[in-house]
Image (tube, rainbow, N blue to C red):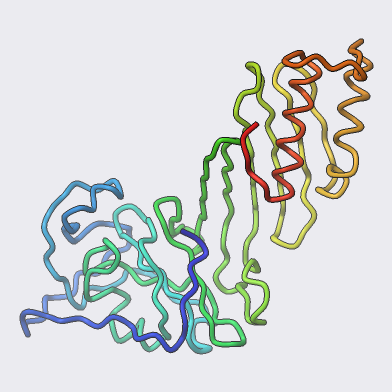
Length: 279
């Protein structure tokens, strides 16, 4: 699920050690697993094993960005073996250093010892939103997050891929999409009489205009500079292309090619309207 809102006045989970003994720190410069996953974590691509709490283990060569010291923020709980973000807690830079960059207890399926990595800045009203889930991963090479989201219903499948830059996330309390770059949104419709339509939207940032490409299988491809241009022209462009190919657009036969293309076109217009329904 993403984004997932949290609030700066929520308490940060604390450790409940079963022993006062402190293991010797074991610094590591790579994403390595030094901890057994909890039972049931096989749903995250891990084998079921038992939990053994880990304390005071170095988080590796990671330095939180300067923005992490400006107050409460969203800190991702990252599985060090897979890079998957299991959850996001509200914390401060003091939270990070006090826990040696690690979670001291199991949290949302990520065992004690999972990495803490700064993800989002708090908004003006003190709210913190974060991203987590099987398709959300931490990118160690540039300290960013790769955010994925896939949804399916009777109308088709939507796949979103984007990158999050933690230090550029929102502080105005309004737009939680700031910090998102390289946004790729793809919609693939369900079949209509054996045909599908695909929509690809590419954006440099959350607020930039998107280039939109609509591709009808085994027929035509339409490219638009932005969504507004697509919404305004797609239906007319489709009818013009049909007529240019010799189809009678004023005599659409149920189940025929013109009828099929128009139904697929409707799936695209509903996508932009936020309405997902079957034909």
